[in-house]
Length: 367
Image (cartoon, rainbow, N blue to C red; front, side, top):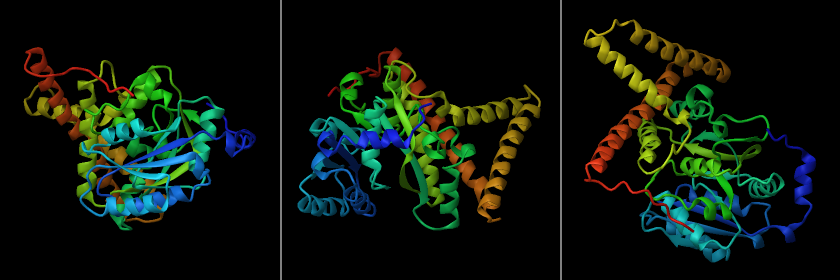
């Protein structure tokens, strides 16, 4: 939607370092001793002026060596600070960081991610050049462990059949407006307009915030030249549980929002699970023939096997044809079943609220 030119990027950078805004980088973390050093090293390797940024690592009462590692970085670099997040969740960590931030631009950075040297500068330059409220890039998903399942999971999370039109995962050819972006580089004024992160929403916090932003008229720009590396879970148990949790929190935000808190595409796996479950129930009870159930199962299976075959050929590894259908299934059904659990929770809590037995008040923290 917005074609990017080299001239525009160079023009944005020509203003010089003196004109650079102060950027507050917030890194929520908890028990991240395996990844936090690589994340901070990538920030330190940035070509953005150190005098124009502060790094706020917000620790959620880590029980490993995370605080010690961050403390060492803070001693060596005065612009790195370690803050405490007693509530432990990512939204609470972001709010701690935003309230402590001195910068006019807020950048959320993931502790599991390594950022390219030009990441910060490009985000800031394009935020100004395009008049956007949030700028983000695409992620290159890599396995945490170099195993067959680890590589297959990373592949599935970068494929349209796996994640739909989640452009920050599958990539884009040119800058475009999007409904969300990975991490994000925000004007601090955004949080004054739409409020801070809702701390009741433990996960899906970025999607909910960005949905509020776009509905308030804000612009989220996704830029292909801004790339970061994300390490995905590599074992099937963790992968399933992660998808189950994400699915659950694709529905639970409806409990607190006054409108639809995210794009409907996030509910597609729920539709698949409900469709299969509903048709199976109708079939077993004799209400309908098995044909509709078989057609839906056949359509999903065909799509799954077809996508797996294409990726196996692309990767030149026939083993993907055996592994990827399982990975896709864990991604879609783990997410869908989790969403189903979230839906049941939503229905029960809504019924309790109607009966006066629960608290479903919609309040949002402010800056």
